[in-house]
Image (cartoon, rainbow, N blue to C red):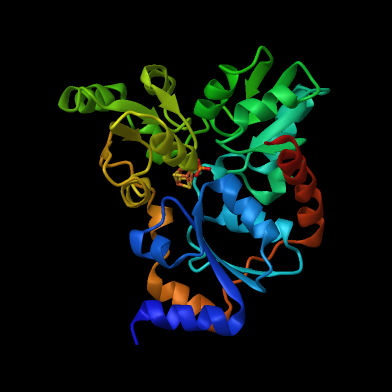
Amino acid sequence: MRIEERIEALKRKKNAIVLAHNYERAEVQDIAEFVGDSLELARIAMDTSADIIIFCGVDFMAETAAILNPHKKVVIPDVCAICPMAQQLPQEVLRAAKSEHPDVETVLYVNTLAESKALADCICTSANAQEIVRAMDTSTVLFGPDHNLAYYAQQGTSKKIVPVPEHGNCPSHHQITLEDLLKAKDAHPNAKIMVHPECIPEVQDRADYIASTSGMVKISKEVEDEEFLIGTEIGLLHRLEKEVPGKKFYPVSNTAVCPQMKMCTLENVEVALEQEQPEVVLSPEIMEAARKPIERMLTLSH
Ligand code: 13P
Ligand code: SF4
């Protein structure tokens, strides 16, 4: 039997589903029940009737699924798939910023540690960052950890956004330069520029469309444009080419690769299904405290 068939059989036997982020390896995306962005994956994780969720993504995504599903088993095939941006805002840094800015609400990007989410008033993703900041009750908002997403959120609101920590960013997106973009545009002058809000402000300012990963798939299906320069992690190209055949997609930078998103392989998905390990385990107190701002996001976000 091929590995894909063995994985299918294990899923059926164990009433398990595989969720995969848009940046995962093509072959992992292809065996998943659902492929999506962070917001979609959180919603699907909450709605599934499966007993086991095999989460092919990075740590904070699997943790979010576990926080929303305290009675289900959430398994992450490779525990080393740790998002470096989420590590940039430990609880003590956030506590210090909160005490410097008392009486303001804190919005944290879902790309954070669970212990930090536990201190937030609301979570956001790249799909709803502007909407969530606008919905906050205070006119100043503490926002972390991504400065580039903070810049994007600021374009959609008159509220004052205070970023925390000082230089939070995603290494895979932050390395995409304006020069990369201009070079790609020279090579494909008719292509529309579509970028992720984790890109630097100079890149965002040149874009025709700024969207979450699944937002990019949706836009490219809906608009009449035929060619796109894609400013995000290159794993998204697989889904774009599969779901939007006939249109052309070019990466702005071939080096925009998130190594942590590539750690999950078919082999470790099979092992994760067989052994139901490694399971995401968080303390009940952190789960309880982090669930509130995640649920607030899901209520506020349309
Ligand atoms: P999306 O929610 O847009 O898929 O982004 C997740 C992420 O980690 C981007 O680097
Ligand atoms: Fe984290 Fe960036 Fe990888 Fe997304 S692409 S998981 S933000 S390191």
